[in-house]
Image (cartoon, rainbow, N blue to C red; front, side, top):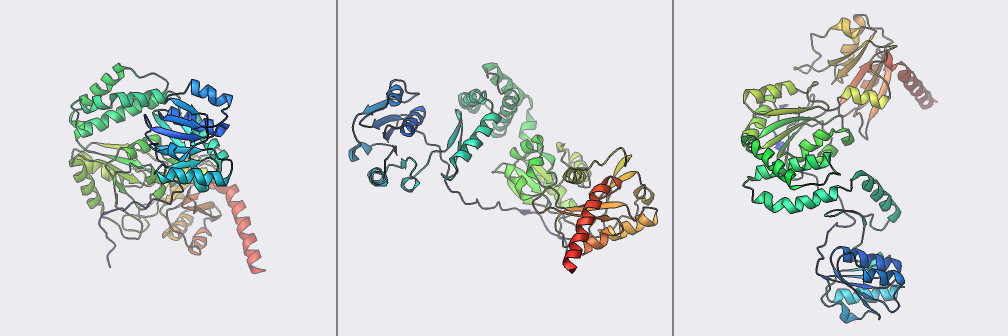
Length: 490
């Protein structure tokens, strides 16, 4: 039985079920039918006109609001017909919206539209709708639609308000500039890789300067910058990206940008699947997993794959749990790339010790309890406890010790540290799957922690912290544990 495996392509998960398919219709110059003159119907007529449709509105007694809209439409012309709609009115229409008083009229309106193949929406009557209108964030040509499938319109509006606050109004100007410049970029002589690099440069500048109007000099500067990079644009490279402890919201902005520009992503098993939601959808994703005591790809194979892909001109992201330079073999991968003359960049991530401290609400360097923090591995190259651990350092009462990958060796580690002078009552906490939905926290004095962990079934990454900064949290946890034990025995 072998513990080796080869890199394999990771099949992306199937799309989760959608209540509605978000679709953006091109309505400029096309005909739209609206029946009704109440406020919701007027609003739909305004939306359709804003999208460039020629809108025919059918209503016997138009409101002042509708008359004002007809006189000053936002974009497409609005024609008022002072009568009830007729089946013949749907001929040639691209879309139909009805403000219907009851289900009988709604059924008739929907049937008449569908009879000639026109998609229909009956306002506030989803049973008769082929499509629905969501809440809209308008930074046209950047447009964002939000739908709750009619279940919670107020909730959708609240989400829209949050997105409105996040997206500067100036993004509309940058999106319009992108549309103006797209054909120029295509005709610029840049290769496909060069054009993609141009848009990365464009986007980075737009995000950093959202409320500054784009000008032609910006286009010239972006083109010049892209061309000045020369062969670097065409060549591949490697970026080591720290995926953090698991919660995708803990990714850095730089990590997200790297994931969104990757051609190939090489993924460790310990990276949470949610992190990949931020990756470029077209990127090829490959599992090159290395998990303790389980099947693992050889490091040399990972290095060779990474280098061969980069030499083929691919932008490779090596996605690693936590921080790639803390017990992540990042140094070996950096050295391999440099020896092969492959450009390599490192994007740091939140390492497990930081994540656990944040989840526990404790300071690793509390001035009353700790003078230093030390990171120690509990898993050597041979899968056992490293033989060269400085046990006097672990036994130091003024240190906070973070032990990575300790699940199989925590008993031996605790025994050796106590023998070197560590107080058996020193507080310790083990956290499995820190920041993830299945996070588990187990606290006990260091002398008791191995037995507690042996009694549990823990999967995923585990971190153990040891030190007096944990005292208050361990006392609370031990009290809860003893209470549970007494309850179970009663």
